[in-house]
Amino acid sequence: MTFRTRFAPSPTGPLHLGHAYSALLAHDMARAAGGKFLLRIEDIDQTRSRPEWEQQIYDDLTWLGITWDADPTRQSDNLPTYRAALEDLWQRHLLFPCTCTRKDILAAMSAPQEGADPTYGPDGLIYPGTCRNRSRPATMPTDCALRLDMEAALNRATDFHFEETGTTPGTIRFDADKITSTIGDIVLSRKDFPGSYHLSVVLDDAAQGITHVIRGQDLFEATKIHVILQKLLGLPTPIYHHHALIRDDQGKRLAKRDDARAIAKYRADGAGPQDIRDMVGL
Ligand code: GLU
Figure (tube, rainbow, N blue to C red):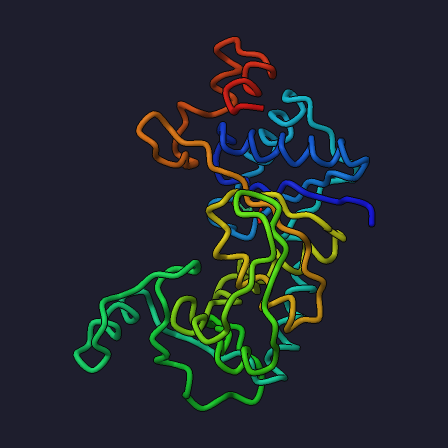
C-alpha cells in the first residue's frame, strides 16, 4: 500500500502556525514513507472562500518547502460526486429534509417536554429530531438542508472502528448506541450547497486514494462520523493520525482570526522556514 496523505485547508483566511504544523507533519511523513502528499482546497463554504486566500495557501506552502504530487483539487469542482452520494442515501431512506433554523433547534431543545439543556457534538448542536418524521417528498429536495437519519444509518452497519497512530494510538472502537445521543442527525447537505464538510471529506479522501489522514486532534470526534459515512457509502476507512494542536501563550487553540500567528506575518517579519519548524517543534 503506497502511503498517500493530504493537506486540506479551507481558503477562508490566512494559514497560521497550526496549519503549518499539520501540513509539514503530513508532508514529512509522506516523504519519509516514500509516499505521496496531495493538496485539496476545501472551499465548500462559498460565502467565505476567496481566490486570494487560495493563492496565499500555495505561496505559504511553497515557502515552507512543501511540494505536492498532483494538481490540487477543489471541492467546488466535485459537486456531481456529492449529489450522487446524496441521491444514493436518499433512495435508501437514510436522509430527511430539514427546514429548522438554529433558533428553531435551540427552542425545541429548551422546550419543557424535551427536558435537557442544548448539547453539542462534533457537528454542533445535537439535533432534537423535529423534522425527522415529517412526510417524505417523492424526490430529494434541493431547497433545504438534508440530515442523516442516524438511527436508521446505525441499523445498516456494524463494527465501528478506525486505526489511530496519533496522540492515542491503537484501534479506536466506538459504540453505535451512544452515537445517536452524542452526535445525532448530522447535516449532509446545506440549502446553498449540495454537501457538508463531513460528506465531502469522506468522498474526496476516497477519490484521492488517501491511505493516511493526518490532521488535528480537534477532529478526533468527527472521525466517528466519517467512519459511519464510509461504511454507509462502501468506502475504505484510511488510517488516522490526529496530532496535538498548536496553542497560543494562553493555551488556546489557534484560529483563522489569529492573524498574529499567520505564516505570512512571520514571513514579512523576516522569519525563515526553519524558524517555523522550530516554533512548532518539528
Ligand atoms: N478543511 C478542514 C480544515 O481546514 C480540513 C479538515 C481535514 O483535514 O479533514 O479544518
